[in-house]
Image (cartoon, rainbow, N blue to C red; front, side):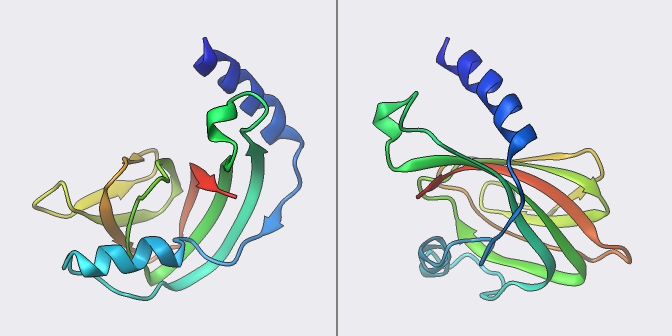
Length: 150
């Protein structure tokens, strides 16, 4: 029942919130632990031409146990040759949907890189360590939704 209420709440809230400029794609506290794990990948995000928070819902009203969390929706554009630094999803599960372009994802739970194309979904499960790169010739546009600390 809580999930159904959250879904309805999201549809209404995301349709009405203005865009807000965000500072970074992967919080620093999630980047350092991934590097400490020895998972190979870039340590700096490069080539991101856009990152906007387009929806933010504090969860404390409907989910008191998540008082310090918000449901966040962002859009991002990663230019050709760009990379999203290796990071770990600690207390920040998420789902990303590729609107345009192509990304190569390197994940701790996959022995081989995964090519993500338009219409693909990336599940960012708790504990996942990963990074992405745009090896294509066109920008990759992504919508990402996650539960983030306030």
